[in-house]
Length: 415
Image (cartoon, rainbow, N blue to C red; front, side):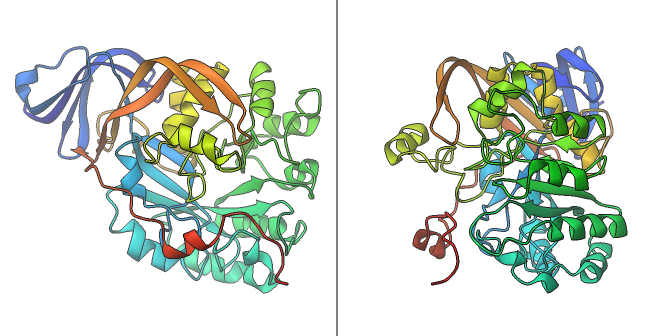
């Protein structure tokens, strides 16, 4: 048998099929052909030597913002994908009902990466930072959203809502209630953003149902999931028992080592690991820290903050490697309705593959407050393969011009 590509000599970690050992991976026609102990290299047109590397399904970043040029935070997915092992991006509410067609035509279709989306409960989408999309209650139009979803089920996989009092136009729990109603109408799950109180975390969790996702779950802000003594709140434990899911959504303001270490110390691991990658978080996870620290973390100024950054932090916290991979492959694939198609290396699945290296050394890890931890390992991407082809090393485009005019911090109502 002849293959287009064989990835040889790597340690395959594929939680979907329970493989965690040395295997070769054969690819042909854009799909996975075989995963075997030994595949003859002469059977392939090209061979990648993955000795001393971890071979996983292409990673899935469950919370990102990739509506580049149309929203204040959008980044270009392909320019980050090749350096991160991410082959599937899930945009978390950048587009609403009015802009979902533009997201499809101008971002999803031209991209080499696979891009899926949670539609914002507001038809305006996430155009700003001050919860502008919720200022007019009429923007949360469930009938309109349902019609748009019915035309977009090939890539719209959920409904996104933000809960937290930041800036102005705080709508209370009304938008969460509408998101749940839209979920019931469309059959899509809700992803709910946590940040500052009000509302209380208890009130938010009371409205969510089994299968809904809480993102920013390791935040240190007002809606954090641990109390002042680091104990997990009873409402959080009840929510997990009820089937509510928890996503990291690191971002520039939503990952605290204090919260993370308290949760990890009690064995509370996230269901999915994600970046909340946007223009504000892309320079590194220290936007709110001092500029000298940002420059030191960024090194040469390239966007070092990727899904691998967050995965490395979870390894530092003690999350087993196989579970970190599960939370960035098989589990998110299940939640977006693509189990067995992506997030797996089973034969017949899409040939989306990440070849990763676990670098050894002395590495500094930071949370969004500038708190530092040191760790002896760091994940990096060696090869990112999408549909059987290695992704091109696309440069990161300059930020849209208006990004330079704002500091990406909510400023409150107009004077």
